[in-house]
Image (cartoon, rainbow, N blue to C red; front, side):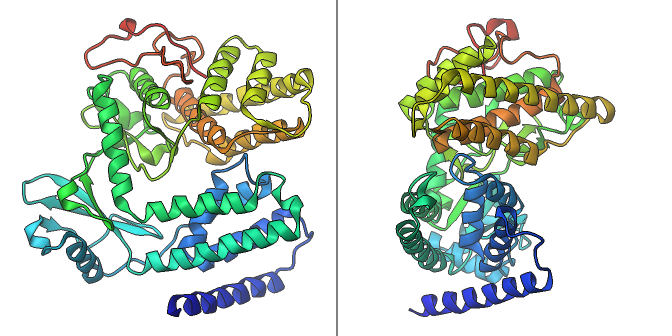
Length: 452
């Protein structure tokens, strides 16, 4: 009850401050862009739950309207750092023993802080350099209270205005979000994801080309996750990559193959491979970080992606249209020929956007991966599908966004690489025919592959 009353008061304050901002700067037009901006500002003031909700909106272009997806790209996960004495208390409470019985050193200053947790550098008694992800105090009660309200509000809004369910049931979306976010509160779930991904690497002979942080279960619990500290440079830092890799192109091929094969052979795929989560490590391997956001491919979507891969490699817009139709939910009968024409126009835009990245890389030796541009392309795909009476699943939106990240990395690190036909590159769909280079294998040893 106390948490509910506190959150109600906080919501009232946030709403008052947001309305005051609107009064000071009235909009020129009452359109979706304006409402999206106001909602984003309100969410930031409401704190952790709503920031996570905003990030969910930003990562779901096949579910939410374009103006909201674009606006919530700016949703800031800015939060107050928790004092170390509180962090220490949570670690000791969850692990059931004093800090000094687990770690020889813990940095009192966090490496990073977000809405739900903050991260501290540390060293285990056995000598390993690690990072500790610690859940902030009281965050579980706040999320449970807020998410209960979000679910009820979604059901009421969906009942009052059924048109709001045009992109999917609001209550179903809220329920999925609630399940996902409450699952994030138990760090043992992320620990499990790390163990599954590391097992995938080992079983597929990929330990020599890629890595994920080793978790330490004995030093982890529901609110504490201790894992290996990986050191390296971001995938967009070409000069930095050259310090650790003699062949940046092969490093990219390895990263792409590992991720593509995880789509096929792992229980999930990493669904947030932006430059901060994809490193070239000091030993030349590729490091995958942060397994908080993962995607899973239903069989129907996986088969459709296989067909889409083949059609894209052949430049067959009609085949691409057919593959997308097979994975989505249709409102009415889809005009395949008209859909194919729209896809062809989109491919032209994608090619033009890639030229800008190549030119920037040539001039500076490095480049930024324009996340807004990537999101716009995903939105265009969703919009083209919607205009043709097709609703694509959220999993496909997550998948194609990661593929676009890799497309941008390729334009920076290997502009002459043809990802659609190079035999070193593994397939993206579920056929499992592609192969990634295992440790010690030369590029020419990798055959039978194609990629979106």
